[in-house]
Structure formats: structure tokens, C-alpha cells
Image 1 (cartoon, rainbow, N blue to C red):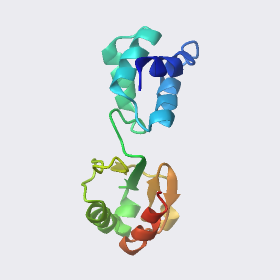
Image 2 (cartoon, helix red, strand yellow):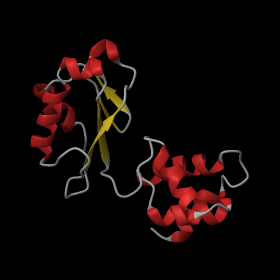
Image 3 (cartoon, rainbow, N blue to C red):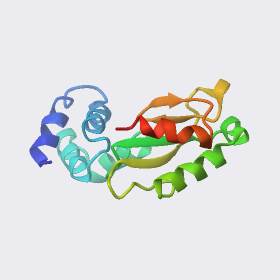
Length: 150
């Protein structure tokens, strides 16, 4: 990745209201995270300090600054999911992938993150993989779910 790649993406949004947020969405769609160098570029394009550009990138829980796996697995940590057994799902994910929440596998394939409610409370616990929801998840179902990630 080169700075010019970031700049090409960012400049498409420079004249839009809230353009920095839209640029961050576009960067995340392209790279699955927001590269730190891209934040410096965004600060220049939008005429804000690096601190403000970084603040926007880190304020929204959807955005992730720094490398992430190709598949971002987020588990809902709301009360309904917790009561339904989310902790057991977290333990199973950590064991199967060999990482802890907030980490990425060495091969760069998977990242584990917590999420707030994802709006699927009728079928808890819930995980999302790159924003696709999986409901009624149990430790026993994880092997099948993870096998979809090729």
C-alpha cells in the first residue's frame, strides 16, 4: 500500500459534508481497517489536525485503526447475549483460533472483537463475521461457521 492509494480514496470525499467519515468508511472497505498513514493523509486533505483526524477514526466503534484480520469476528456483549451464553462462545473462539479478544491470528486471517448490540436479540448469542450476522451461536456451531471463511 502506498500513500497515493490512500490519497486517491480520501480525495473522492474531500468536498462532501462529513467527508472524512465517508473517506474512513471507504478506506475500511478497501483494507478492512484504517491504516495509520491514511489518517495523516486525511488530516491534510480535510485541513484538520492529525489529532482531530485520529479522534474521528477512533471515536466510532465501527472503525478500526491498525491492522485487522481478513475476517473480523465480533461477538455481541449485550445483556441478552451474555445471559444466553456469549462467554462460552468467546472461550470457544479463543481456543479454536488461538488468540484472545482484541487480537489477530498470526496468519492475518481472523480478528476477534467485542460489539455492542447488533439488533438480533431474538436469537442470541450473536456473532458477526465482516458484518454478516450469525444467530443462536453455540460453541458446537463455531467449526461450521468458521469453515465458511475461506
